Structure formats: C-alpha cells, structure tokens
Length: 372
Image (cartoon, rainbow, N blue to C red; front, side):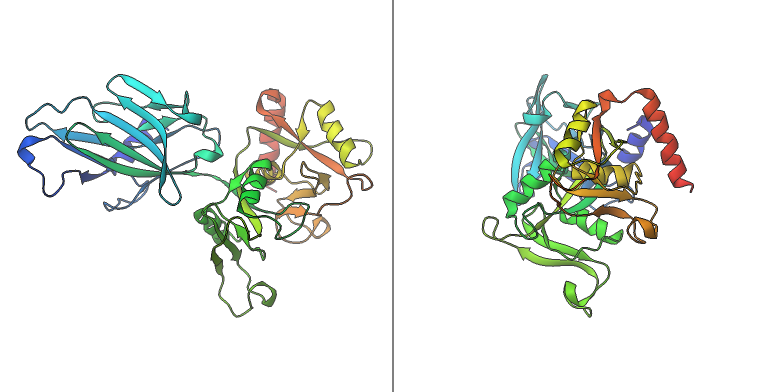
C-alpha cells in the first residue's frame, strides 16, 4: 500500500474513547484506538476492512493517542490477535516497549508499521489464504486498555466442490480438508454472498467456514428449493459438524505460479498425465488452481484435461456452444476411470520456475482475452 493510500485510509479514522464511565480521569492516561473502513466515513461500531490477495502485503490500520494527565503509565503494550468463529482468539503479534514477537505462521511475516507516534498498525507480508478474517488490535498500559477490530479480505474466487465419493459425502472436517487439498479454504458467508451477487448459481448445499450449510440460487427452479422461492443464498443453518454430510464451498485467491494445458501428441490416462507434468518439473493442477487461473488470469481452454483430484475439467472465459454452453465457468466432466479414460492434462508451475518470456506471453494473452 502506497504512502498516499495510507494517508487516505487514516483520514477516515474514527476516534473511539477507551475511558470507562466510572473511572477517575484525574488518576490515569486515556488511550484511544482508531478504526478504519475504506471508502465512506464509518460510525463508531463499524469494523475496518482492508483488501489484498494471496502473496500480497497489507497494512491492518490501528492508531492510538493518549492524554497525559498525571501518573506513570508504564510501557505501552500492543497486541494483535486473530478472531475465530464464534469468539476465540489466537495470538498474531505482541510488542512491549522495544520487545517484539510474532506467533505461529505470522512469525517473520508480521511487523509494526510505526509510522509516527501512535501508530500500532500491523504490516502482514506474503498474505496466505488462512490470513483471511477479523483481527483485534489491543493497546494497553498499566492503567487503561481498549481494542479495535479490522477485517482482512481477499480478492479471489469461490468454487463448489465434492470428491470422487459423490455429492453430500463430507462432514465439516472432511470439507475443510478437501478445500485445503484443492488449494483453498472453506468460504465465508460474505464470500459466498458476494459470489451470488456476481451470478453464482449452485443447487447443492455446502459447508461454509462458520459451520453453516448454504447454497446460492440466482435462477429459482423446482429442483432447487421451488421455483416460486426468491433468489438468494439459501440457508440450512448450523449443522452437526461430525454427523451431517454435504458438499463444500471453497475459496481461493490468486496464484503464486501458473496453470497451463500441456500439449502432447496423444491423450493420456491419469497416471500418464501426472508423470507428464512431473517430467516438466511441475505438478498436476489442483481444482482451486484451475479456478484461480480461470477467474483471475482469464484462462480459456476448450480442451478437457485431468486435474489433481482425478476429475476432468476445463476453463471457459468466452462461452461458445462447442465448448459446453453459453455461460463462463470451469466445466466439470466428473471423475472418469483413471486407468481407461484418456484426456489432456492441466499442470501447475510454481512462481520460481516461470521464466520472463512466459510471463510476457501470459500478459499478452490476458490482454487479448479482454479485447476479443
């Protein structure tokens, strides 16, 4: 985020007083925390929102000031925590005086911005899918403390998912693992709702990050909850995480690499396809990687190919009848026999293995897709 962007962010900060109503103002310092909402000026209770993508860097804004009205407050303590559903907290970063400590996956990725007095903002580098969510900034001295919250959002794409076992075969924990295995995380309600606003229509109910089961309907029909019911995100409520089984709605963000269709002289079985990618120094693309390539890199390929979970799919940005219909999307041909059915293959190449010429070609192809 540029310095000018930060200035715009902090220009909308709203002051929240920390002083309890029954405290003695003459005996303590008053600490204030500011929260931010990008865009319109916010009310006091509105949480802050910042947006980035996987692999990016982001500033989680938090500012404070205090009024010196006597007494020694001691060193200022700044603590950042991640808020999990429904209300559990995990440590992210703590600063006390000159001491600094990051926790878990944030170690060596999170630092205080410290852009002048009263800046408790946290800089998170190389953002991951798991960083998505709400964070709490707590500013404390020996006499006063208060907190502000900010939400870290990610640009990305939702993809519905079920494994080879078939529809409605996963409990909540299976769904979490399935999304992870396919380069994603379970989607939040906000992410699913945004995808529905963008036209996502899916007739099968799936787990979300908060343990609820929902599905988005843009085109009501009898087989999807009755034709007369309104459009929207249909909600089954919170279900038993161990005993009940549904599909999953996964979320992924931009790639730290590239998906490509491997040109070969013949079609291949699944084991042959996996080896063909391996021979190039790459791996079979995961479902989430193919969705990210389709949505965020505008990959358009009218050729069915194996992907990592044993399914056969292909991405279409510019719909045409010969390529599966008139809607854009990732076409899914299911889970054919890995041994006897023959298809092409989609491989994935890590960022460090991509040469400059490939990057230039990718930019040109993306421009062409936008101007066809």
